[in-house]
Image (cartoon, rainbow, N blue to C red):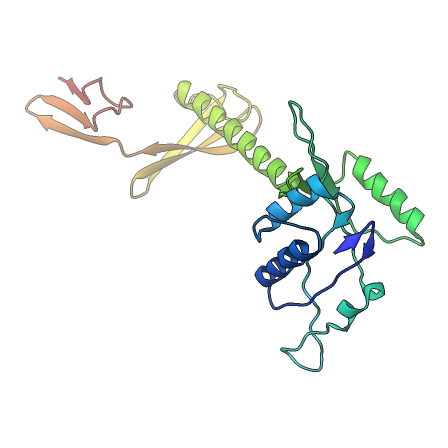
Length: 249
């Protein structure tokens, strides 16, 4: 617990849940807190009643002397504490919420000022990777937004949509135009059969690309006397009419 940046209370407990409960008990005793032992409620209460107070809960380091022991000597010495305490922003009444965005990046530099300059260069460089941001609202709730992952997903969706559009164009031309350059100067080789598909290798004389036309199993044909009937699944119009059946004499 800090007051205007100075540590006023420190306590070591086993686990985050116990830490939050201990924090709530301290605030009830020292500051008159009456809310639940939940971190969002505590942050919201602090933002409303005493913005000069700050809190930080962190994992203590493991002492090399024993696997299960904790190096907690620093907890009793406020000067030994290290780290950055981020308080939630004040709550505002308006059409939009107020968020506090935290952008963290590690940089190598000779001093703090150079590190700040290099971090700013990374932030403003349009070619740099989009960052992971930590956002706090006025209630103290934290949201992590990975802009790089969202950008990658959007790019994947765009590429998939572009691929589907090319497939539709190829089918609409009955496979008689090159899927790469749309030229009609193409030639096909023999058909190779798979379990449920057939592949026919093609070559474009215009852009010199090699490709394959893919045909799928849609049904079967049946000779009935002098007639030949094509049967497909209902709703499949690739080889037959609306009723899934086509008859030829």
